[in-house]
Image (tube, rainbow, N blue to C red; front, side, top):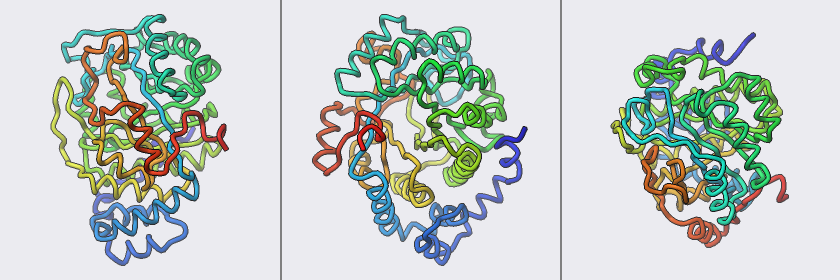
Length: 369
C-alpha cells in the first residue's frame, strides 16, 4: 500500500535546497501575483530572493487570513501527562539519557491540572507525553481521554506514533486531533538525533500521518523542529507532506506548527539559526500556499514576536503553557521539556488579542460560526 514515503524518496534533499536557493526575484514576483500558489511558488516565497518582499508577503498573508478566519485566533493549552521516555533525542529534556526525576500523572492529578485549564477558559487541550509505550501507552491515553472528554470540547494528543487500530480506539474514546512532527525530513540528520528507541525508525514516523489519515481523524498536525537542519528544505518537505495528505485524506483538516529549538535540561545548540524575519517569511509563505490550513504558534516564541504575528497568518496559539507533568498545579517545580519564552498569563494574552481587534476563540470555529 502506498504512503508518503514513496513520494518522499522521489526527492533529493540537496537538489531541493539548491532549487530553493536559486530562486530569483522574478520567481518571487510571479508567486506573489499568482492566484494559486504551488510548491514551486512556495520554494520562491521561502527563498533568500523573497526577503526584500517580506512586507508584501505579510500584507497578502494578512488579507487571506482575515478572509478565511476573520478576526479570530483559536486558543489551546498543552497538558503534559508524563515525562517518561524510552527514546534518546539529543534536543529534548525528556530524553532517556537525561537524569531527571520521571513522573506520570495519576487520574486525580490529571483532573487537577484539567480544572486549572478549564477555569482559565480553555476548551482545546493538547495531551503530551514522552514516548514510553509501557508507561504511557494506548491504555493510559485511552483512560486520560475518557477522563477529560466531559471537561473539554476538543482533545488532541502529541505522543509516540501509534498503529492505525490504536488510533481508531482513541478516536472512539473522543480523540479530536493528533500532532506528529517529523522533527527533520533529512534522513541522515534524523538518525544522528534519534540514535535509540522506537523513534529511530525514520520511515515509521514519516508514515504516521498516513495511518492517521486512514482512520478519518478530524485533524492532523505537522511540523519540523527548526534548528536541526536547514529550515527552508525542511519546510518544503513539510509542505510536500501536507499536499500529499490533503489529496489522499481530503476529509481531514490540517495544521502546521513552527517550533524552534529551545534550551532545555540537556542542551543542544541549533545547527542552523532561524531568525524572527525567517519565521515570519515562512508563516506568510504557508498562508499563501494554503488558505485553509491552520497555522499555530506556541509559547516557545517571545512576547513581541507573538504580538506581531497575530495579524499576519497565525490562526491558533497557546497561552500560559507548562511543559512539565503537573506544571500547572500538581508539581510546578519539576523540570520542563524545554523553556518557554512567553510567560504571560492567559488573561493577559486574551486582552492583548482583543486590543488588536482579535477575538480569542475557546471552542472550535465550527461551533462559533
